[in-house]
Amino acid sequence: MSTTTGRRRFMTRSVKAAIAAWMAVLARGAADPASGFFGLFGKKKEGLQPGPDGSLKLNLKDEPYRDILEPGGAIKLSVQGHKRPLIIIRTAEQGVVALSSMCTHMGCEVDLPAEGYIDCPCHDSHFDLSGKAQSGPAKEPLQRFPSTVDIKENVVTISGLIGD
Image (cartoon, rainbow, N blue to C red; front, side):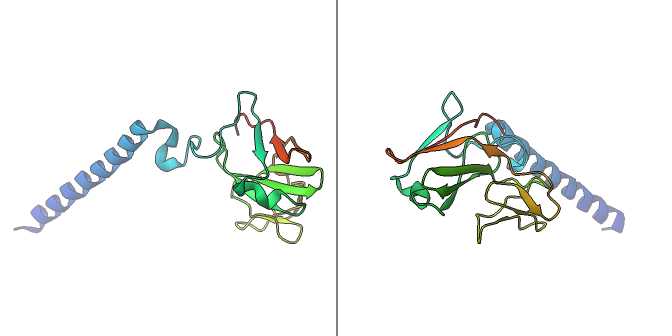
């Protein structure tokens, strides 16, 4: 077998493998268009579904939300239509803050608060508990969503969740 035939066979097989891989990606997108290209584009389907008015009600007695039953607690919460989870922080008996966990610098997911700050692990931006940029390359605050606490019912309501 000549080296030309060997190279030609190698190139043919390589092109066929690349086409097969690309077809698999396209098939996945056709089966679940919301997932987009490897899930990088489009909106997530997982997570809580906001009501028609764009709000969520969280019963703080339910297991996933017990960490925000008391002031100082924080959780991440996946919401349909949002690429990154929300961060819900119980700031006081009657206070709660709901923020996007998407850093305003490059879109990385920020961490839960620690020692009074929210940190972005990608480029070392720091935000206070209200979402305001404190240091690092991020200059804009984290997106904030209106939120309230009904202390009698132990329910947190988060509004404005239509779209990212």
